[in-house]
Each structure stands twice: as structure tokens, then as C-alpha cells.
Length: 364
Image 1 (tube, one colour):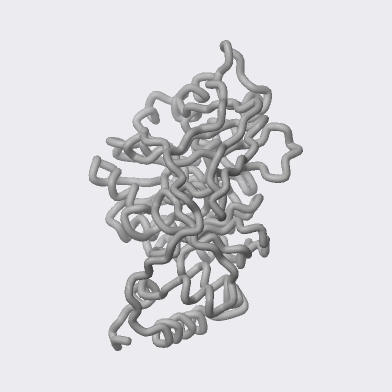
Image 2 (image 1 turned 180 degrees about the vertical axis):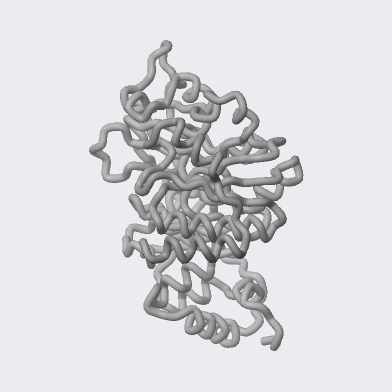
């Protein structure tokens, strides 16, 4: 190991299959839209053991798709959670990573064969475009999502339908999307790359479903294809937050020139050409200068947003923090509160980040 090798370089060399085998994690090698995926049986964060974790074999980026967990992983985050989470200091985790790199030595690029056959093009379950004959769904009305917004974001309603895919052993399987709102996810070119299925009955075990084997939503910025060319954008957390911000800004002619995206969680993925940061950099090439993060008003979410802002700053893009009332997200407050939060957003710098951390860390 080179003496001056950075932690990022060391992590880049870590072979996640080697680490999973060493630490006793059960996994399968599968194929996703973005290459070989490691399908891990147990999530080290939520503890679910139903094969809901997918990691990219090369980058280690991935997600847990169990219920409300939806943790986004990097190599560092997965390894940290896997060996003890918050019970170990960062220094101890760094030493562990260095030891693994030393132990595994130089290794040629893996050529693992997936146990899953080629999945083909992504096709949505059978669903109706919203609105249906000029009418909205009760669920969307209750969330104040308008007919115009349904059209703008391409929402659909699956009354009865399934998503067909190839299982780990090569057999055809089906995922039931009945009584769910289908939320398409597109890359910056507008190509369909994934989707979410949101239950509207309140009775389903999982509020959200995702198509197995396809790219993690954490790789993309929701609605990013509609943010090309904007100088400023606002980043909500989830799809419905983006819709609420869009509606609030549309009511104000001075905010109609601000783009709206969502991050699919309180984290920004970084690494390679297939990450949310890579998409932000592409938006930067198209004129983006400033990102305002507007996640929910919980102290933990605000602290995560501060770190995300600093990360964005490090790539040459200005970042601001917009705060909402405690415990609320953009879809749960009056549109004027959303607009006010944007106008009062705080530019994040290393100095302002310190004072904000002090303010919110004691409230977590």
C-alpha cells in the first residue's frame, strides 16, 4: 500500500465481493441496467434479511429497498454499518479498510457471472395516464397534487397490473403493482430508467415498490431532465416533495425560472458517471450555478442537507439550505411556506456550516 494513498483511493481498491465473503454476508451476483450487482441478503442498517439490498459490484453504490429503510450505500457506508455502525469511531473503520486493502492485495478486475439473465428494456406495468377523464385520484387530492402536476410529472395509476422480471435463478417472476401510483424516473436525456409504485390503499406491506434488477433511483435526480438549462434549482427529498415545490413556485411568476428536482433520500450519491453528483455536473455544464436543498425540517435531515451542500460546493456549484418547520416536508405545508423557505435559504460555506451544525446537533 502506497504511503500517500488517500482513503478514497484505498476504498476504490476494495473488492466488495472479497469483503462480503470475508465478513460472512450472504449474497448473489446479479445483472442490473448498470452492470453487475451484488444482491445482499441482509441490510446492515435495518436488519431485514429478504434480499432487498443491491450494490454495484465495482463502485459499491447501492440501496436497501425494504419498506421505509431505503438507505443509500457507498463502500464506506456499507462497510461502516456492516462492522458495527456507530459503535466504532471513524479512525477504527479507516484502520479496518486499510487492513482489508493490505490483506486482499492487488486483484485483477473480477469477471463474476451473474445468476440473473438479461432483463431487457424497462416496461411499466399496465397503467392509466393521470388524470383519468379529467378526474384526479382521492389520494392525490388529499396530498394537494393537482391535475396539471399529474400531467407534468407523467403520473399513472395501476388499478390491476404486474411488472415481469427475471428472478435470480433465471425464472420469470411478477411484482404486483395493483392500486399504486406509478412514478416514472428518467435520466437527463429523458429515457425511462426506473419507476416507483406508491400504494394508495394504506394496507400494503410496502408503501413503495421498485422494479427489481434495474438501476437504483439513487443514481438519478428525479425530474432532472426538466432542469436542464436552469441557473438555479431546488432539490427536495422525494418525488411528491418535488411536485409540491413545483406547484408552489408555479404560483409565483418570479420563481418560475427555478428548476425542481429530488434526491430520493437525504443523501447524494457520488462516484463515476452514474451518480447524482455526475448528473449535477451535467446540469452545471448546461448553466447550473446554484442548488438549494429543501429536505424536511427535522434536525437530522438538516444536518444531512448541510453535508450535501458542502459536497456540492466542492464540485464548484453554489449551495444553499432552505429550512421548513420541524417535522414537515414541502408536501405537508402551505405553498407560501415553501416559497418563504426558498427566499430565506442560507448560503452554505465552511464557516456557515460550522455554526449551523452547532445549532442543530444538539436537537438530534
